[in-house]
Amino acid sequence: MKLKQKILILALLPLILAVCIIAYNISQLMSLNASTEEVVDSLVAVEELNSSVQSLQKSLSVYSINVSENNKYNIETDLARTEEIYNSLQSSFSTDRQRQISAQFEEKFTKIAEATTASLQETNVAEIKRQSQRTRGIVNDVIELKRDVSANYTAMQQELGNKINAITWISIISAVALIIVSVVSALYFTNRIVGRISRLTAGAKEIAAGNLNVQFEDKVSDDEVGELQVSFRQMTGNLKEIITHVSDSSDQVAASAEELMASADETMLGTELISTSIQNVSDAADKQKEMSNASASFAHKVLEEAEEIANQANQATTLSNSTNEKIEKGSVYVENTVSQMNLIQSTVDETADSLTLLASRTTEIVNILKLVQDISDQTNLLALNAAIEAARAGEAGKGFAVVADEVKKLSEQTKQSVSDISRIAVEIENDTTTTVASIQQVKDRVNAGITISYDTKATFDEILAIIGQVQNQVTEITAVSDSIHSKMATVSEQSLQMAAVSETTADNAVSVASASEEQLASMSEVNTAAGSLAHLAEELQGIVAKFRT
Image (cartoon, rainbow, N blue to C red; front, top):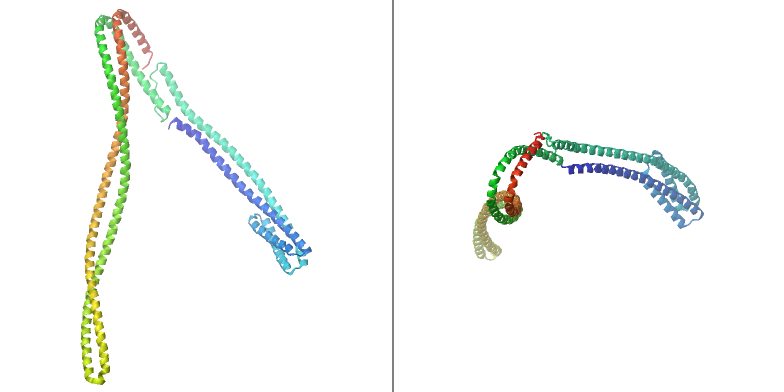
């Protein structure tokens, strides 16, 4: 966890605790306020009841002096209002004393109301006056009830004050606890951070004094101080390597100083060759600068293309996910289609069986109709024979001739009906045969549809597998494009740095070319400088000796 996150937690923890304390105080105060409102409402209701009872007493007195419809209406209004106020007040009685007074009031008021109502109907002024005097009794009950409610309110006020004091003390204690927790947390985190920084400071002082054998503790956290510990360990190791290398180099410098004095003459001879070579280096540096700029431009283009590849890969991933969802839905639809096709096939099979049975029944009907037609023909012949016999019988056979004629007509009608039914049965049989053939075609097509549905589902499964492979390949492309983006950014930066170095090299080459002309005049001083170099090497060895590696 980073220092920023730790500090943020340290700052938010007291704030959250403070919000909890405030929320608790608000809830307690709201509860107290609700209790106060209930008692105040009771006081107001009792006061209204008292006012209503006194108004009733006054109305009764006025009516006993002046009998009128208006005064009668006032009495009825006061009775109804008093009863309404009392009914609304009953639920707020909280003590046995209040409920006892309430029962007395209800008993007296009920009697007064009943007697007053009867007296008003009879216009009994004397009774009205007597009820006016009885009303003083319930006035006293209301006053007693008011005293008890007021006493209850006073007690509640005392309890309310105690609760407020308790809330105040709880708030104070919570605030003190919050301050203590905040201070302890701050000291804890501060001591941890400062202690680790102090150890790093002590180690840095040891390094400054020349002790490179300081051991820094391992990284114990992921914050900036832990990273600083790692950096100090790496720095100490690097310093050890540098000091060791400098020590070795100082020995070599001391030995090389003597060789430098011997090679000074040879250097003068090579100065002219160096001047020519430096000019070549300057030209090469210019070319290198141009190539570095071109490389940076190319790397920038590749970087843009890598970003485009990443964007296209992300779009392909989104599209493949959408396609995958749609194909899964399509697969579900295909499964539902197969189920429906199976149901259709079952229904078609049942229909084919029913039609086959219908064809069989139709054939039976045709056979029965043929039998009926034969019977009708025989009946017709019998009717004809009966008509002939009736004609032979003469006058005695006229009645029988009429019956024979009716039988003949009935036989002919039966024959015609049988003919019509036979024709219809044959048509039904033909239609049934055609329908059975059509049903068979439907069955074949349903089977073909089921086969196609299974093939479609298999195709969907193959597409799902292919899309899965595509998603994996897109993921790999995204990873590769991210890698290309990172590497090309590095290449672009290094190309720009190389261009800057090349420009610096070209400028330095020009300077060296100018300086090489002066080198010939300066080589006479090389021997003196070599002696000074040997002296400096000795001093460097003395400085390195101060460090303990």
